[in-house]
Length: 327
Picture 1 (cartoon, rainbow, N blue to C red):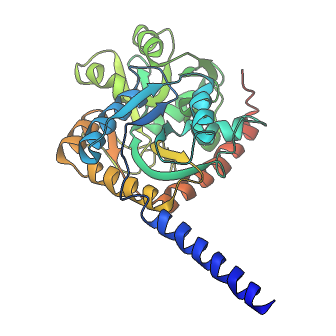
Picture 2 (cartoon, rainbow, N blue to C red):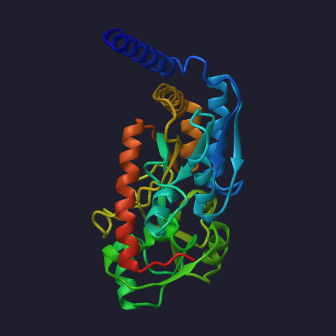
Picture 3 (tube, helix red, strand yellow):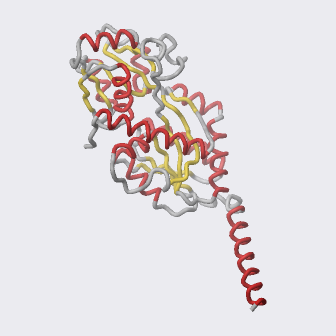
């Protein structure tokens, strides 16, 4: 009996050692084939363009193709669900945005758990957001905008890129903090907002500045009231932050990041984290991202996981306070 017990313990120890060794060496042979990077938004958008740039540089570092696949729909949830159910081998990645946390706050049920079904790898960027207006609106900073909105309560039309979008959440946060009432006009993307705000069809928007930069620099009838960042930007050096110009504490964290399925070995996650963060430190990547109004970040997997968790809590509060219903 004792001999049998010792033999069983020996086999268990041997198997445990083999498993630990296999996980420890998983990154040595990784990747041995192409990697899929799923993007939950349409080709040509800001998230897609950023993903393709990261994929290109990551392919060079890993020595294997990183192929971007667009799976648009449901605010990025279709792509997220596919990655959550993917094999735990590190060959399927999710390139996503703050929409992951927003959807967790907006929908009572999702086909995945935004925390337990994923292994965060790293944040990639934060995007510069701004309160932008048609230049006919007499507001050049947050204080003037808030005063005008209170004087014309409920009359201002403010566009967003859709119900529950990061643009909409940034708007709700601003209006709550400023205690003002506006008319929310949801659009299906930035292009139509840009057209209508230039024509004066809508008065304002809070959105990522990327698509607006050429018009802002060409002295068109579009103006930045204030930036939703904690510091000024070299892209728009004359634009104040909302925090410094009349709405203390206002800051929008609109991020992009990369995750994979939950049980991918830690050695592979660590390797991807190192390589992607090295890409983000490349002068060429920094230059391209900054020109598009984004700031390269990078993080540890745990830091990224904490940021997602904190955003879910914040967005749940915003959704509840505004009574937002998904459409």
